[in-house]
Length: 114
Image (cartoon, rainbow, N blue to C red; front, top):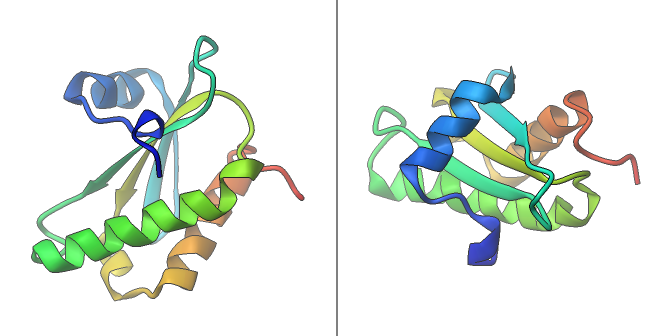
């Protein structure tokens, strides 16, 4: 995932949390806020220390980044997206993480049907 597609600054995360909408399932929470001035979507990932040690947290983040990479051409609109991993995400494989993310994006109507 290119760096232009990432949200890095705390201020940008807080704007999405405060003014955006959210949707959740058992494994992930998705916050999203439309930004019409952007050329494309951006993602921010948050994995708490409660999930596990650094190895586990980084693995969850890698799975999420790869899942976004595989569905990026189907994401609709110019949104800032923040994904928060919940505890069950640490025990999931890549395909389960991707299915969970696709479920969230579909429910929020941010993913095309193609």
